[in-house]
Length: 183
Ligand SMILES: CC(C)(COP(=O)(O)OP(=O)(O)OC[C@H]1O[C@@H](n2cnc3c(N)ncnc32)[C@H](O)[C@@H]1OP(=O)(O)O)[C@@H](O)C(=O)NCCC(=O)NCCS
Image (cartoon, rainbow, N blue to C red; front, side, top):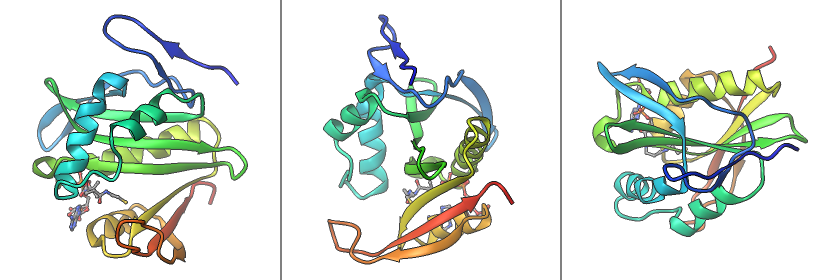
C-alpha cells in the first residue's frame, strides 16, 4: 500500500490513501464551489455541518474525524467549499475484500441542500469507485431518513438489508443499500 502524507503550512498532516483527488470546481445551484480533499484543519467545519444537519447533535465529533483523517487506511474525505466555508462533505472508505466503496458519511449544510450538491458528491464517488476498479458502492441510512433514501433510490442504489437497532443514539434500524457498478 502506498501512503500519501501531506504536511505543509497550508495543509496539516493527513493520510488519505484511496486516490489522489485533485481539487476541482463545480457548479451547484448556480454557485461555483470547490471540491477538494479534507485536511484536519477542516474538522471544525465538518463538526459544524454535523451539528447543523442533526439538530445540534453531531454523531461524529472532532476526535472521530481526527482519527478518520489521520489513520493509515484507504479513506477519502472530500469537502465542498464556498469561499472559506466548508458546506458539505462525503466520507469514502475502500473495502477491498468486497471490492466496494463505502459511503461512511455524507452531509450538506441545510441552506445548501436541494441544489444537487449531494447528488454531485455521490456521482463523484461513483467516478472514483470506477477509477480504482471497485464494483459497488454501499451505504447505510436511517429508516426514517426519507430524503436521503429517496435520493439514493434515484441514484440507483438498491436496498439489500435492514440492520435492526444499528444506530446507538436511538436504536433506529439502518437501511443498507448497494449500487452495483458492474451491470
Ligand atoms: C441527504 C443529503 C446529503 C442530500 O443532499 P442535497 O444536496 O440536498 O441533495 P440534492 O440536492 O442532490 O437532492 C437530490 C434529491 O433528493 C431530494 N432531497 C434531498 N434532501 C431531501 C430531504 N431532506 N427531503 C426530501 N427530499 C430530499 C431533493 O429534493 C432532490 O430531489 P430531485 O433530484 O428530485 O430534485 C442532505 O439532505 C443532507 O445533508 N441531509 C442531512 C444528513 C443526511 O441525512 N445525510 C445522509 C446520511 S445517510
